[in-house]
Amino acid sequence: MTKSNSAVMGWRGRVFAAGGLFFVAVFVTFIVSLIAADIFYIDKEAVTEVLTSPFIRHALWMSLWTSVLTTLLSLLFAIPMGYALSRYDFPGKVLVDAIVDLPIVFPPLVAGLTLLVFFSQTSPGRWIEDSLGWEFVFQPKGIVLCQFLVSASFAIRSARTAFDEVDRRYENVAMTLGCSHWGSFRRVSLPLAKNGIIAGGILTWARALGLFGPLLIFVGSFRGRTEVLSTTIFLETSVGNLEVALAVALLLVFVAIIALIMIRVIGHGRGVKL
Amino acid sequence: MIRAKKLSYGVGDFRLRQLDLEVAAGQYFVLLGPPGSGKTIFLECLCGLKRASSGQVFIDDRDITTLEPRLRGIGYVPQDYALFGHLSVRENIAFGLRTRSIGQKEVARKVTETADMLGIRHLLKRGIAGLSGGEKQRTALARALTLEPKVLLLDEPVCALDECTRQEVCALLCRVHEQLGLTTIHVSHNLQEAFSVADRAAILDGGTLQQVGALGELLRRPGNEFVARFMRCENIFFGEIARKDADGMPEAVVDGISLCLPDSSGDLGDKVEFMIRPEDVLVVPLDRPNGDQRNHFSSRVEHWRDCGDYIRVELNGQFKLVAHMTHAAFTELKADNSSELGVILRPEKVHVLGA
Image (cartoon, rainbow over all chains, first blue to last red; front, side, top):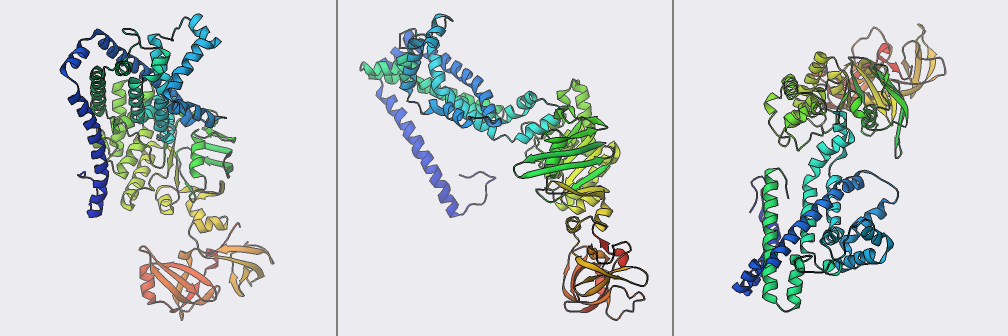
């Protein structure tokens, strides 16, 4: 119950620890029960149908690559943004902070609507689609853009917090040891902040993988084209095909569990604590 | 040589005020001051981690004020060492070398050489977590020394260590200094530490240099009351030169008592502030004859305390005094609280502040 390096524990300490572990147990049991209920509910045909359907396989592939690309794109923004917001002060920083966090509190449907309005009703949006030829509306590219809008803030927020926790004196010492600002960032701040950044990446990926509301509005759910697993679940449920929807949901849960365990196992070997 | 010329810096309400300080090449210099006096900020201005609002910094007559920290040739060991927790001891020590175009073999040779000098070769494969305070200190020092800096800045390098390790590390710092001949500035608030490593020091308070000089000079000839009190002198008096004796020595009146001062303490009517160090207060049996009757008073032991190295005796007679006595001298006196004793303040041991 206790780690070998923890303090000697009296009965009050044991009650306190048991209290914390009780809530862990309740929560885990709740989640596992839900998944177990789904497993017992679905029948073999639904599972076979899901596993053999080329459209579902395509949706799974779309879900994976778009969510991974969204995560990488988010981290590409999150790392420099998190560092800049952590280290530099500038006029209007409070407002910028609030805007960065805004997508977290955005109702997801609003994000889809906003994107649709921007690209179909405004001249900058039409210019991007028509002149630059970057089409997003009802296109696979739009899935990434939509996921990025809704989930990148998690990565940015986590990166900022991670850099906040890296004492600036480490960078200072690195600079007296011959590093430029970039060198001290790359060799000191980034490795020290990596746990927080990776945790933000996982949150971003999870959010992107499960997103469906704004996707339905912005890119639709065209079989074999813009369909992802989360939209499949919604569409199958809406036509009353509950067993197939549940089988797809379990596939999504299975993929997520495998990915989360893999990240932890690989990360643990490289000193990442999540 | 490193020199600060009219160096100023401000943060919030705090100001470093036009500091002028020169540390000669190869000198081990201690910067003393109470917490919050600006010692760390001053060091950070010297190594370029803080941009001075005005003034200049020179190393060997080269103006480095606008140079980036990495180009200054200054080794810096911060207060809590700031060792990189994601790297091993070896990688920490090699950190600076890897910013240069130095081959792997040369890096390994330099790391081993520095680790040998500081006695931490056996730690090279270890991580930072789990190192003792002394081991961390040596690793941080090794990391700063591998780049062969011209100047070494040590910010309270031993303040977090236990007494035994502190003495050990101070001895190591002296040895490294002798071996490498580095110009070193060592920040501290501890007098014992300062005496164990350096012979020249400055005292900083409120962002202003109070006095610069040999440690003995700061101890026995402080320039003002702050320096005297910082150097742990408690016997500070205010008086007025009322007359001169037959030999022309000035006499100051303090609380109605006449005290003979050294020559050139001032002219008649001058207000003077003077001090005598506790270890210079001679405490003698009351009936001991004294050839020289100047500054010989009777007093009573109000309280005494064994401080380990010495006995601290608080005396209250015609005025309050604190004396530091050896155990042998105190035992010989057979004194206790309320004992009546004689006190002699040799005029040559009395120092007029600011004189």
